[in-house]
Image 1 (tube, rainbow, N blue to C red):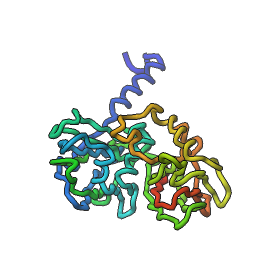
Image 2 (cartoon, rainbow, N blue to C red):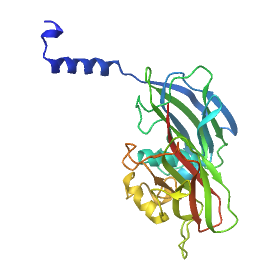
Image 3 (tube, rainbow, N blue to C red):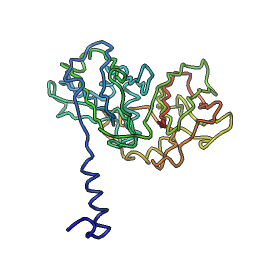
Image 4 (cartoon, rainbow, N blue to C red):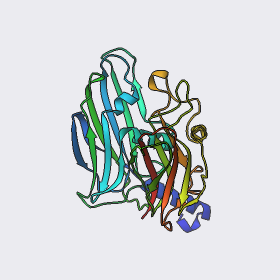
Length: 320
């Protein structure tokens, strides 16, 4: 029997099977169990389209159970760049916040117990699309030597012993993506006073979210956030988020994470702690993301409850 004798819907099913059968991914090690040192080192990435990187830190407990906050202090920054232009530029805490926003978890911590000298590990995803393994949203093919990741690390102190760092890349051969993810940190200095503080944001891409890392959350007697009453200004006109109180943003995180969150008191509950976000892709399909290509200026307006520095990370979708 030839294909023309098979009903049309069987032809379609057969075609789908063939297409699915052709799909593949390749996971390859980039850095294998490297002893964490105080260093800044670039590592080349594959030339094939890349879905994401997997960064893992292994260690032995030095005294008691290390918190995620403690582990992240040894990962100063992760920079991914193509031809010298940053695709991602994040401190460890901001990468964990990006994982929390995209996947509902600020990385994965596996530790056996609080007992000293037992093995444990913590890992994060460095993503190039909103979903993993998405051939339409990943970093496109590059030429050899053009695409690299730079790891800035510090030797762990007494918190961890014999700490090792590994990195793998997950590639999607043959993928022809239409977009990729971009997240670049802006370290906003303390403005010198409380009250309004405007932060310029990049333009030219679709804005998915703004991650905001603070130093101050309310304590025992004062309802003071580092930044509160946040709003977005598109050419000096309020857009989408006209006013959002910090507690409201924390509550709306329920759209992406479990409200009962996430771990024990010793892990500071939220991983990473003291972060929230403004979400312009709440339906995860791009329906509400903000096209900034026509903007002359895009600003985040913060009402500073405390005169302090902030980490502000726009998460963008770049069209190819």
